[in-house]
Image (cartoon, rainbow, N blue to C red; front, side, top):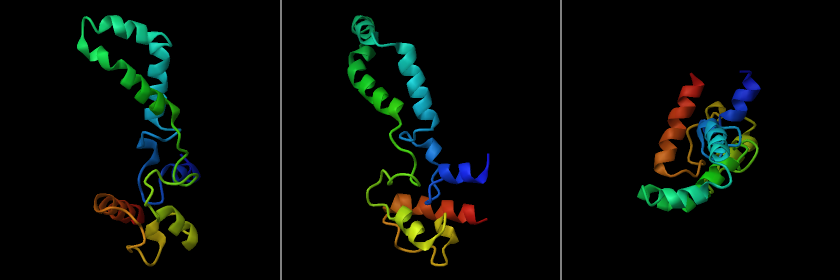
Length: 132
């Protein structure tokens, strides 16, 4: 994989966009799309009948709604679009600083990320790994 493709899949915070459930080129979108195709347009009728044999099928409508979302893959990645986490400042900050990743900035780590503690820890750890 070339570095441009890799950079497009790794968000500036260091998260792997290809693992995200909303990424348009991710395995989750591809597999959800394939499952949707395999189930076909009329599976809700089958699910109604199967519900008499197995109550798991009673929730098919909610499952189908989630599957539709997962199969859509609405996000092109943080480098193309805004982060799905609305408070994230990483994308804008790396653009302002002219770097690909936070670890390339002399001020890293800083408090400009806008991430909650759990994501902040991953952001810092991911960028330290990228810097190696």
